[in-house]
Amino acid sequence: MVPDPFASGTLAAVLSWLLAAPILLGMLGGALSVVFAPAFTRVKILYAWIVICALALTPVRYMLFQIAAAAS
Image 1 (cartoon, one colour):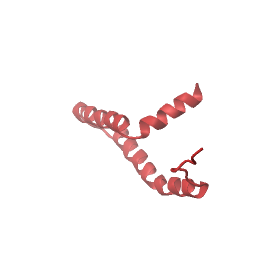
Image 2 (cartoon, helix red, strand yellow; image 1 turned 30 degrees about the vertical axis):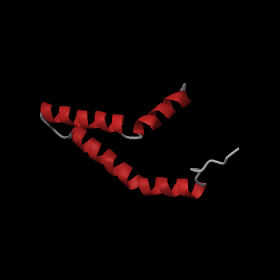
Image 3 (cartoon, rainbow, N blue to C red; image 1 turned 60 degrees about the vertical axis):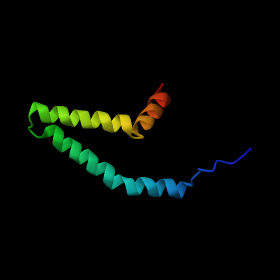
Image 4 (tube, helix red, strand yellow; image 1 turned 90 degrees about the vertical axis):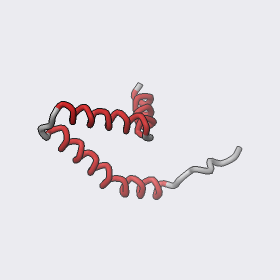
């Protein structure tokens, strides 16, 4: 058998999550500020479209699928 060429160690996984944490928290803070700020309907539709595109076109959809598969 051939070993996995894309295998990463525990240290690499921990460092990647630590370096991604500020970006993820910034995205969460931005999303919460958009949700709770008063806006016109057109602006809310635009933000909803951006979120749908981000979920459909990024690796987040694979993470959500893995969570759903693990939960079932």
